[in-house]
Amino acid sequence: ELSGEIPTQLGQLENLTTLILEDNALEGKVPTNLGLLNNLTTLNLSNNTLTGTVPVEICNLGLTTLKVDCEEVLCFCCSESGCLETFLEPL
Image (cartoon, rainbow, N blue to C red; front, side):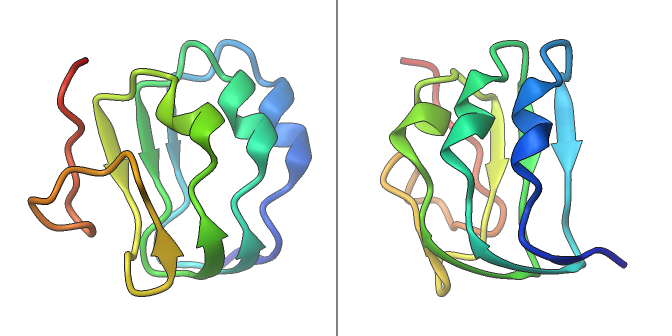
């Protein structure tokens, strides 16, 4: 189980396509620099104690799947189909 804040160093993993961090004890805000992961298609941050907002930089990645807990984290780029199992529609 991972705890603490999401490491900002993850934003340096340029070739990362999938990042699944669900079911941990992560807290704090979602780092803006995850928006640097241009190859990322799937991001799962559910079942943690994160707060704040999903950064617009992440919304602009064109993810096909984004899972967050909307009771804890605001997500303006999530579809209305349910935040925990959110699948983004292509723009």
